[in-house]
Length: 98
Length: 98
Length: 98
Length: 98
Image 1: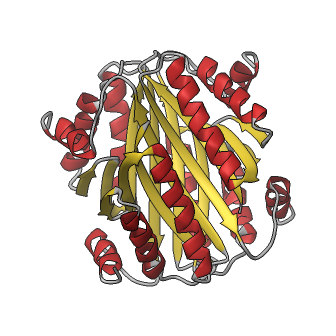
Image 2 (image 1 turned 180 degrees about the vertical axis):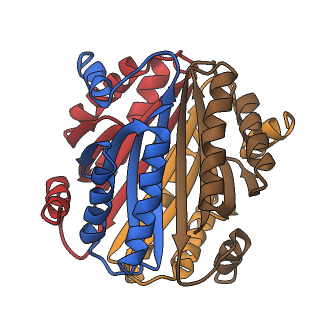
């Protein structure tokens, strides 16, 4: 089952600057060989469900290991059985109707 | 790693009434032996990360099998390493300050 | 336009304990006269769109005024034109199918 | 108060293809003069809180007017009082640490 996800990771209890932690999580996602799209409010991820989820778990573990006592994540997940669709196709499909 | 999650599952392409699908997903979560709290906008879940995530995946599979060609999920996940905390404690902690 | 919302407010940069800020936000929502349901991952809100949104804005202002330099909020919003539905009806509709 | 938001709009009850509705919402956001970044899972928005929120409400109204009986939205909102930050700076701040 393929998933297109959006991941926003918020480390809590380490101050106001979060980018070091977000970058560490981004590296985890890259090492997992997932299709990625870093954007201003998170990272879009395309991949097999299990691979995406294993990487999200690893993000929490890595951010905790860097010293964050709490981690809060917002994850949206889309799956479909009617047809295959890539992240690029999703964006193009909207742009063609603008 | 324990997680406290909030799961909102939106089946797409099966019309306007979603409760039959949400109930099927609720049964999946119950059968997984997770701590649950059904509320007006989703279900709060308390459990080990892997158990929570396996149940969320099973939800998508079950809702697709019921005929929904697309499933969109919003999942929030909180983990903490400083101390153990239950869903009940989270609510009480806020209520005590009201 | 009536809305049923779920609000999760995360103050950032004030340490690991968030309940004092969440409680302040809860008071704002109450003072706004909205239907509320505090739960383990946020607060469900039922009310007119403009009233809900004004209260969410006031939450951000109040939490900043308490000292949080950053506030991150996850808000889900549901509206429907086919029929009126309360938060209680949403939950009952699922429970009847369990 | 400036906000950086991520908006994901899901029309419900109009079938499996959502892009026509998402595009209509995108036009609403553009007409509101907001900074936008369409991505695979939503649209990032930068602007004054009130302008962002007025446009999100207009999205719901427009999507209902197009025939969707239910609209479900996931909105994340970030505000900060310590310093001004753009969407572009948020992305660059992470990329510099990769």
